[in-house]
Amino acid sequence: MFRILDSEQIIATLETLRRRIVERFPSASLAKVCAELISIAGESRARTARIARPYYGLRTGTGIVIVGGLALLAMAIGLIEVKREQTNVYGILQGIESGFNIILLMGAAIFFLVTLETRLKRREAMDGLHELRSIVHVIDMHQLTKDPTTLEEAAHATESSPQRTMSAYDLGRYLDYCSEMLSLIAKVAALYAQSSKDPVVVEAASDIGQITTNLSNKIWQKITLVQRMPPLRGA
Image (cartoon, rainbow, N blue to C red; front, side):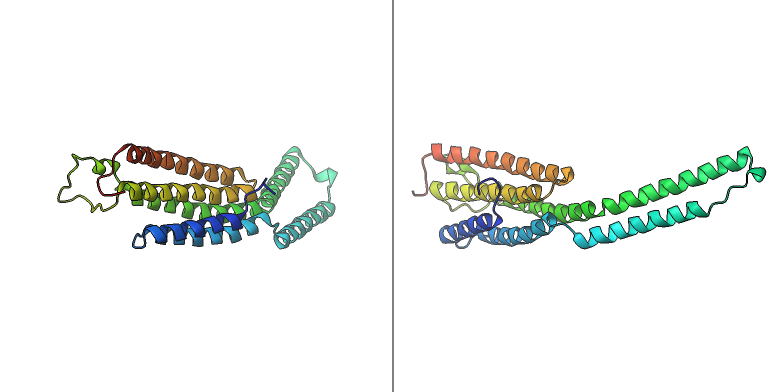
């Protein structure tokens, strides 16, 4: 029960997080980002289900093509007639080269067909992971201007400074919501690694987990600064 990630629980946690963001920051666009993440998580749930499920139709078709190709090759070999009185070294070498080329091409074709399912699943998984990687950077952009040093007494805004109206407590909550979203993105990415044994997919999912961890650490450095500062704009 607790040995695999449950996509339903991840989506439920994201929906709860979106409601928390809306209730505390009703006009913030972070809630819209969370809603988009819920949509991506739902699509990822369907994708990972398809990836985990064998493509029986493709496997059957591949088996039929391979068996048929080997049968035709066997028939062609059976039709070859060797006339010893007309054979020479050049003809033998030419025949061996032709046979080797045929076997090489058939091996390449068989390898292509056998690995087709893996490559199709890999492409689908990488498309989903690319969407997750993109929304990670969107969240990073939202927390980029949330600077705890603006809460200091000596802080003063310039003409180009972004508008800052959050109290120390609200700023800490906003940053914490960003950190939670990043953590949940890593869990959605882990669904792809869980449903696929493809090392390329596993590595890509692991990379997203590392990126979200690094960004979350950066956010928590800000949260620590907020907690150490006396708020200037209310509790």
